[in-house]
Length: 111
Image (cartoon, rainbow, N blue to C red; front, top):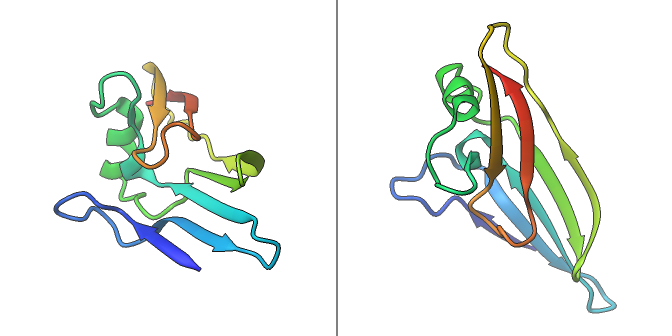
């Protein structure tokens, strides 16, 4: 099994962002995990209200989205959506920095 970690300098966290495994049939399975630090605006790469809220609350180790890909087929995944008890509604299009062609996070979150 191969692990891929956050490649930002300086490193923002030490959690694996992907794991790759090849089974006995030669099929490659990749598990992607997006954390708060991977949540940036998909079009600009800028910090978002959701990103800032999670970082400010020290919620950096919680998997926000997971995705399991076998060869080119997405077979499983989950997304955690957060809503904060304030009045400003932030609609953000989020995308992790790893495998952007496979993972697209879209979220409506209240800041």
